[in-house]
Length: 84
Image 1 (cartoon, rainbow, N blue to C red):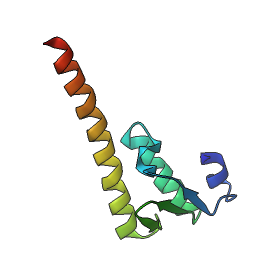
Image 2 (image 1 turned 45 degrees about the horizontal axis):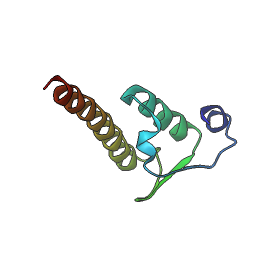
Image 3 (image 1 turned 90 degrees about the horizontal axis):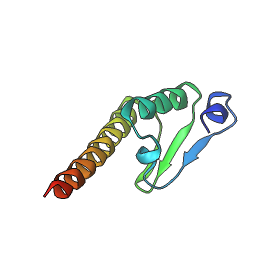
C-alpha cells in the first residue's frame, strides 16, 4: 500500500479506523507524510481527510496517537489483570 501511495498510483486510502493501520505512531505519521506528498486522500468512517492540509493532518495525527495509547492501555490492563 505504501509503495502504491508513494508512486502516485493511489488517489485515496480507504478503511475503517485507518489510524489502526499502524501499530506505532512513527509508522502512522510516515504514512500521513507520504500521502501528503503524493496528494493522496484518507477516507475513514468519520470523513475524508487531506493530509496535505494542516488541520486534517493534525486530526489524523491525534487519532493515531489515541490508537497507540489505547493499544498500550489494553495491554497494560491485561498484564495487570493476569498478575492478580
